[in-house]
Image (cartoon, rainbow, N blue to C red; front, side, top):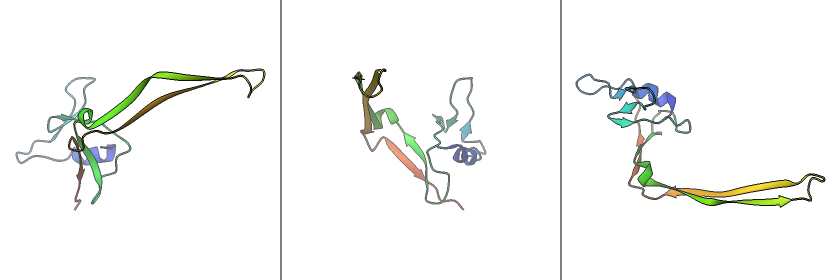
Length: 110
């Protein structure tokens, strides 16, 4: 979730009046929401009616990052005489591996 959504979620309480949001216990840890760690992502939507503002799940099981170990280097001695240019490329990619592992939460704001 993003920062604005976090500000709204921090105000939520359970039936006994306890906050669902818990600040980190020690330095270097993440805050938690109902016992699960929270990560701030600026790309997520703000909390609004019918907006998918929070993603929840096991991202290691749900998303696969493919990272090839080799780096390609192309030597270009012709473009910028008398200098030699080097172009480096690396192939990376990713995609959803398990759609059931990640869910988005939609809010109805009143």
